Image (cartoon, rainbow, N blue to C red; front, side, top):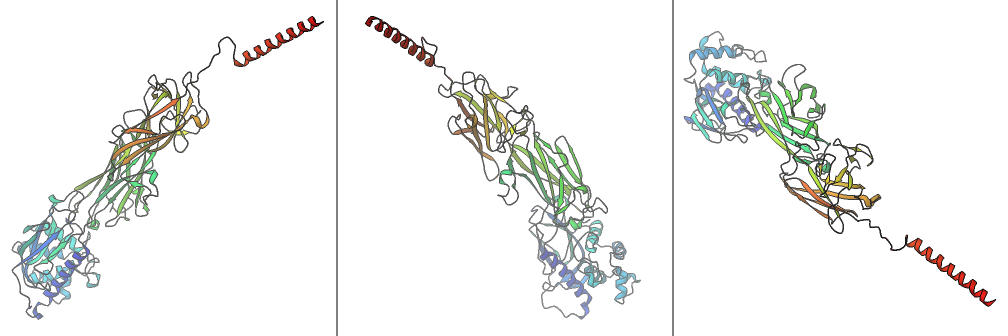
Length: 573
């Protein structure tokens, strides 16, 4: 309905009290003594808006009056010059509608006060009309007016504001944060539609006596918001909220949880219909996990109230009218409610060009489109982003002594959970000998490449991995057990804004060359060095071998000794 943004409770109460004061003053004007406070011909009010500093407000005046600065009592009530006789007739017809309480139609109200409701002059009397309007705008169920005193959709104050903005010509424009001054009287202020900023909605109707003691209006600072987050699994429990933050890192094949939280406007109840759509544009290296989307409001699961679609890396979650009656409405939503969308996306495409490595990151942008003007079908749009970082490892295989590159070494890699990387870009194999385990082989330059010749090991998370050598180059000994394992660690550094500002690594194990590794933040690569000891065969000249040669020498010596002993015995005989 009418353009508005929720006011603070203090301001709203002040406006309603002011309305009641006007009604009381008008009703007893003949019995009230002349006020001691001086009356002014002009009044002033300042509307403060924390959320939208560029807002302006259209001002409408129905009546001029003299307003007491202390009590808001009104005297000398007269129709504004813009309210013609024809408009007065239309207004009386409008006031005779049933606004929800049965007895609050204008003519009924006149009759209850002992006035002739059939007399046109009585019906159009400015004093009578103002008293009735004020009792309805600021009334409550106890006074026989609408059930709710605040400006919700369908209340008298809301419906009447719509009538005024449609029928009357504005008398001026108030600028946010600046004093608006004009003739004293009873005024309506609504946000100028063209000045509704991103994330803002039009203001709730502000009814007040200009010239009374309401000199400032502070609108409630609760604009529409959106927060996009990704779950950093290494910090679950550490952040107090399951690791949700604006950035995270992940490894290939991981299903990464995302969360989008949007806040509906504080004046949600002013809307007859409210459109809500969350659109999330996934990076090309991520695929939505089918069926994983869940929508909640508070503790209530309302997923079935939203239409969920996914195509070409775009996930949309839509409800065209959350206030609809029946199955598609979401009665769980109230002013200021948060709608939370969670889902999972899988990091895919191990060797393609889709995953972004390094400091650029895989940026994920979510948008919230929402009704921003109760008087129209226009939509506002706000967005937020989250970034997922992914890393690579370059492994160089060299001779431990000569530092020359070694060709033909074969490695597999397992993650911190003990699972081996497979050829389909997942971590599912429990044994290094499984047929689908990805094997990396050192090329002529000593660099590990995959089965397709792609250099490096792609799709790594921050954290610890284990390289296992399963075959050494020709002429080198293949290590076994723990000696075959090299522990590598990817160590990123992020700033407070979640930007990658540093990257390094550590390495350990008998095959490790040194204990640190260098990283490049632009490519997201960490360069590790591993070595092998050469297996050198030692030959002996003139013999089959050390063991055999020794036996022959001993045998020959023993034979010579026996022959010599025999000869000596014969000679003696």
